Length: 235
Image (cartoon, rainbow, N blue to C red):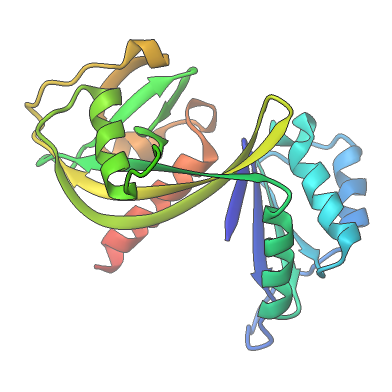
């Protein structure tokens, strides 16, 4: 499971003794020692020894809440001794947040291009909150239509979920976004939802998404595309 705190990615895994090769895990205190040295670790991944103690729980929450680390594109993989231990930790971690659901779409046309939105100086995908008594599937279709102006939309299967944290007022929020595949014609009319701060809507090819610089999109969105592209290669 990967939880994104802006550019910081927190990954939660279980040690597997069957692995022939593995990266060495370090203690959390050792990790923070590295980070506070001020060395540029942008884009790197660390493996940290983990347990389900309250002390580590508070450390991880404070880590994702610190704007210094949220701005660094860094992956920290917390490795637990067992699946029950990992589940106990994640349950306790998510209890520290206000839980919300969102839904969005990965819309593909007949040319193999993906419908993309540009806002807050980043390329992303259309998504938004699930309204009261609204199904997740309905919310995904509605949000795509609202944010892109696309009417002729064919819904498809669910891709999966992504998770990220952010602060709303004084409250920390844990958002689960449910993603669905959708299809539409490349000739369909599209227009950005300006009142929501969306500056542009465009079709982008797989090659264009792969070649985007890290500062031009979000790690969470790149993670979603990596998952989709990997599945298409396997298929």
